[in-house]
Length: 272
Image 1 (cartoon, helix red, strand yellow):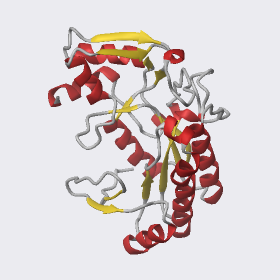
Image 2 (cartoon, one colour):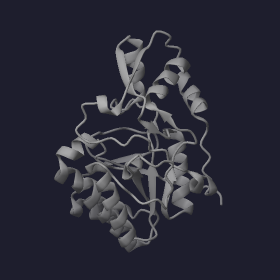
Image 3 (tube, helix red, strand yellow):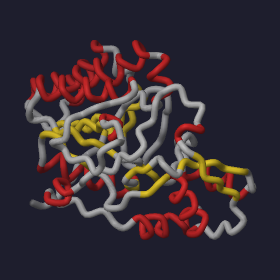
Image 4 (tube, one colour):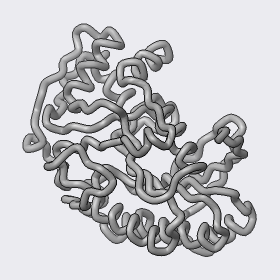
């Protein structure tokens, strides 16, 4: 099946942005009247719902506020897509698991250990109930370069290493990293081909500590001060799962083909 060409309309709330060839609309997804009006005005052919309150500590403290975007808005979007019988991809998270029995397949029972993970599980279940044709895309740790959002992982980490700051990264926090480029490609493939739950992650698992060391190597920051720590050393409010390695076999069978972690990082190198 050839990849379709889409006219993309972006929805933002608190982070207004400009993207080439993308019409950006500002909207509060938790306002159902506004959300329904956007569906009527735009009449979308498909929807990728990637908005979330994704900081576990924030969700742990502000449960009602985060629930409105992570669950209520997600279910409303699913219902509106169901009414129109259009493709929907909802981006979920590897935080639906407890990190104790990796690698995780789509069929494995969910077992979240914090509110953020619980909300993602709740959203998954309600979306599938209201729109069985929806695709639930569980994402791993996504990395990339963004001039829009400075709260990401890579750019602040590189800057801290260049400034010779002492950085502590967990050696027991393991993920299956995926670049923004591969993630977007995979999401569009899933949008056109798949439904149900699918894991979208890189082929390799790596700790946050080793990821930082690899960044320092590739970006040639030879005097980076990176120290290993453990999850128990963190002063986090929400519990963090240790090993959230995802099995991405199903995604690969659907045509997903992520590059190696090193090649993805080397591709970023000239842009820094």
